[in-house]
Image (cartoon, rainbow, N blue to C red; front, side):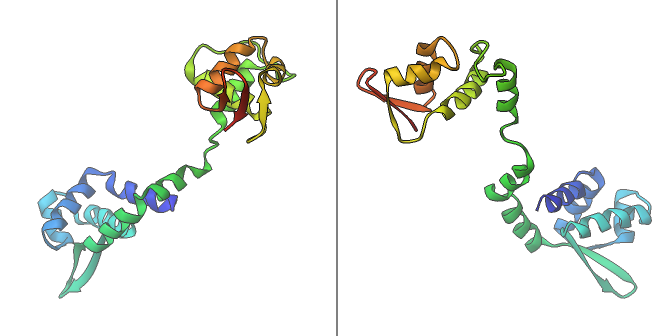
Length: 184
């Protein structure tokens, strides 16, 4: 699908092609007519039309000696519905390593043994570190504050800040003023 999106956007990424689409919204035109309207040479207009046909935006049919081009309105509407759906746009980004930022932050802030050199002051970096630290806890398992502190001490000496931030960022919950903690 990403190739189809690229082809679609490339087809519309030229002002002359956008003008052609704008003209074809109103009615059908031949290459010669478009050439005169846009003041471009017919081979240039044909090149632009070929890109629009490739993207599925324009179709042609023969009338006498001429090929006549028209906007494929139903195809444009169908493409818009499918290509711009949230699912399709998300699939384009599926090749991106969503954890790349976290990996970089963890590398920058941790030692070889996995402990943290320091806690980041920037919120986004702290959040990445917390996502790293919270993996030490099993989902659904309840921990006492003492157990939480023992686990967190393996990462950083400031266990109180780590505990508070894990809860504050919604990665863990606690019950009863420090009684039990669990990973969400």
